[in-house]
Length: 229
Image (cartoon, rainbow, N blue to C red; front, side, top):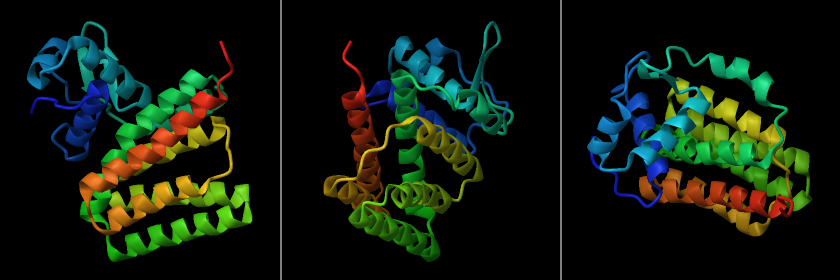
């Protein structure tokens, strides 16, 4: 593995592992190297590796088995069954965890969408954005939520990776059950347009950066909505 050279080290580690899984270099049931060895390979601290693995475990991508090691999940179907168990959770910390997980997932699928998306995929993504724009102008929150969901799921569809699409659907569904929605501003709509245009241009780095701004905006809004300690 190449050394990690990013400021947000746990996020970068998670993205690297997700990339290895989606490319088939890590397969279901494969064992990951021990944490210390993984940290050495990536040139990072063990605590960063541990934090990253905990995040991926929460998503159901890997299983950490005490005394045995860490393994890529044998089945991703368990995510759907877990939906009902965790959907009622309302704590801001858990919502934040889901949004942080989406930073890993959405940036990965945005990259794949840039590389694999067909003309039909990109046309569907633009239609979803136009629905968002129309709903924003009409201040129709129900239509906006539906269009926003369709926009992000269409990016996942354009990635043409069934496992990642399934995971994105589950995580987005969990977040939509928890997060407090506020009307989109023109700035937020512009952030989504930036994602659209980057994917249409097949500009991987611009798409990843645009997705981070969208999710970062949600994290910032969540912080504003939290009650004072």
